Amino acid sequence: MKITTLGIWGGYPKANSATSSFLIEHDGFHCLFDCGSGVLASLQNYIALDSLDAVVISHYHADHIADIGSLQYSRLIQYYLGHPSPPLPIYGHTLDEEQFTKLSYKEQTTAIELAAHQPITIGPFTVTACPTVHPVYCLALKFTVGNQSAVFTADTEWTDALIPFATDADILFSEANLYEEHIGISPGHLAGSQAGTLAEQAGVKQLILTHLPHHGEIQDILHEAKKTFAGPVELAEAGKVYTL
Ligand code: ZN
Image (tube, rainbow, N blue to C red; front, top):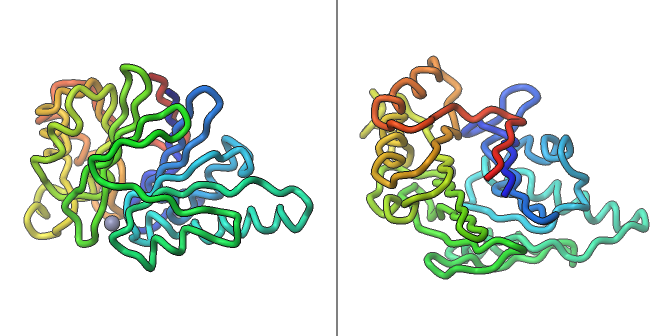
């Protein structure tokens, strides 16, 4: 499994960057995890858009879906130019029916249900979802190939449910949108120390901090995570590749 970081930001992208998103590949299959602002531009640094095989969406906040419309237009325009592609499957939960329906578009993309704790096969991956705690319904995702697994918390505040879900993962991509002083004040997100605690209690091999804030000194978030997780931990970095 090869995972490329496409973007690292929460809320909106900085200049020439993207919100938190990852390209997950194995055996020539290309799966995009989350598709917020700037992701479509970033993705084209690594693959052609018509090489994309599937998209998985954690939840329907704008910083996770903003570029879905542009992705759909890209396929429609290529269709008009005589380069049609088969409908692209976009996986998302169905608890927000209006948003789920928008994942389907003019036979260019097809919405497919992603349900908690019901493993599905997406290309070479077995994908499992676990509800998080966030102002809107959101799913953490686990991508497994053979005995290798990568877990993405997506957006969440602390929840014990993620400990068994992430147990023994080869790599954990945890959101870390908060500074320590914001724990309990800003609902729906984790601080660095909490991401570290999750990694430690789940016994993951490696921790990557993503969905980072636009204020303060983000190295402080890394510093706090190192206090609670004994394993290797780093801030997500656009373009960085992890091979499991
Ligand atoms: Zn969110």
